[in-house]
Length: 285
Image (cartoon, rainbow, N blue to C red):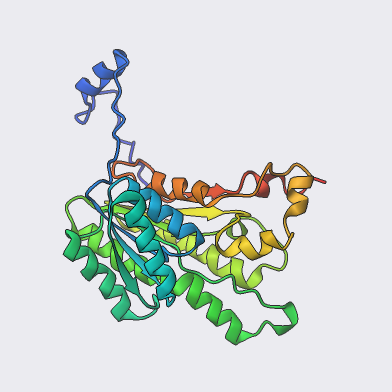
């Protein structure tokens, strides 16, 4: 196989930016702020525990937001009201299941009405798929696969295709879990589809040239799908053993998602664990 670097012979690069090099030598750096202001961003599953925090963070920055939810209209409208009260921004709501082609089209139509192809999108929907081992069967496994893999990937395909066709491209962020990158017994029905989602993100990142695709993988957070487990005491031992100092917060995940949505971000095909070190140190105690 020919390496992309095989033609290097020590000659000067035709892509070298001497102005940038001189800036750096003078310790002058460019750190852009509010780079998503005025840009269209889609947050599917944006009314849940983790998605809502991300929506609020992006609204504070002035992004034009399309926010999706499955069925809870009351919660969606409550979030829209809170966003407007706290940030003076209005969000556009899209309802429905990601497996429905019509719903996926509505996301793109809403983005078009706000200004065109989305500059970024975060896809939160999924299902904890908690099933007792003795009750696990083909029906329950297929349901988890559809909720945690098929639906999110089909939406990523639709949104990423629109981004790839635009001049500026964009950024997709998929929602994984620490259980997709580390083994936790009892998590088969949830973790396996999420692991497939991580692999899909890497494939898409390789496939698209101007669309970055990354994964945020939360750990034991006090919001989102882990809320029931955390509030029920499942992860208390992790704090008591010193594996983590505290449980994760919705704001921790929102900041990680925002990092990947940065328009000029230089990262793709990666998984960012937001777990306080739990997967690294879970064998303590």
